Image 1 (cartoon, one colour):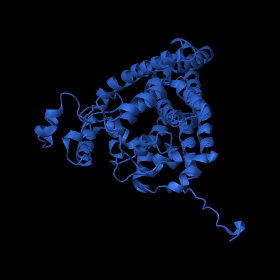
Image 2: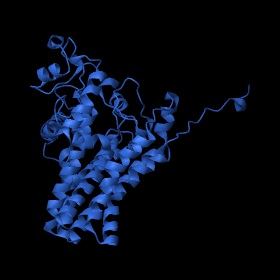
Image 3: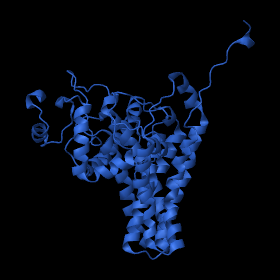
Image 4: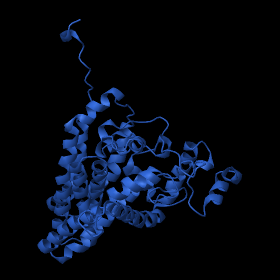
Length: 391
C-alpha cells in the first residue's frame, strides 16, 4: 500500500459547534429591558430579561431535556486544538464589559423608580454571573493570555481573587468539611453565603501570600494577582464615577454583590452534601465524578460553557468546555442551574427536592454525606439513618 492510499484520520464533527454562540447572546440581553422600557414607556419592562433567564431557560431545559452524548476520547485533542472555541470565549469578554458599562450608564441617566432600579441590579448581576463563569473557564488554562483575560473578566464586580481561591483552594478541598465553597446537607444558601463569600476571600489571600513569599516577591507588589484584579476594578469604577457621578456608586456596589452571589449559588448547587472519604493517612480520596452534581440540560449547558458537566471539570480542570464529558455515575440535578438557583433561594423547597436525591446519590450511606454542623442527628433521624453508621 502506498503512502497516498493510507486512510485519512477521521475528523470529528461537533454537533454543538454552533450552539456555543448562545453564550454571547444571553449576556447581551442586558439591553432588552431598557429597549422595551423606552419603547413602551413602562419601567416594569426592565424585569423581562429576568423572566427570560429564570423562567424561559428552565422551561426550555424541561422541554428539550438532556443531552448526554460525549465526544470520543480520540477526538479530544482535535477539539482542544480548535481555536474556534477559544475565540468564542474571547469574544464574550467585551460583551460582558459592555453590558456592565451600559447598565451603569442607563441607571445613572434615567430617573428610575425603586423597583426598576432593583431590576437593573438583578439584571446586571445575572449577566455578571456569566462573567464569573467565563473567568472560571479561562482561569483554569495554562497560558498567560487566557489567565489575564480571566482576571479582566472578573474585575467589574471586584471578584478578581476568584481564580486564586478556586484553583488552589476549592479544587484541593472540594467535597470536604474544610471547603468553604462546598455546601452541606441541611445548610440553606442563606447560611452558606456567610461562610462561602468571606471564606473564599480569606483563603485566596492566604494562598497568594504563600505563593509570593515562596517566590521572594513583596505581598503588596504588582506580582500579587489579587491586587492586580482590585486595581482593574478600582480604575473602572473611578472612570464610571467621574463620568456618571457619585450616584452610580450604590448601583455598582449592589450589582457587584448580586454578581458574586451568582457564584455562591453555583457553588451551593454543585457539591451539596457530597463528601469524599477520608483515608487512613488523614488525606481525602481523590475527587471522583460522584462528588459533583451534574446537569446535562441542553439550553443551560449551551449558555454556560458546559459548566454543569462539573464532574469531568474536577477530574480534568484544564480540559476545555467543548470536550467535557457526562459520567453516568455522577449525581444528576433535576434542572439546569437557572432552575436550581430559584429552588435554592427557597430552602424548604430545596431540601424537599434535593435531600432525597442526595440520599439516593450516596447509596443511603450517611458516611458519604457532608452534614451541616449541629444538624447531623436530626437529619439522620428524619431520614432513618443509624448514627452508629457514622462512628
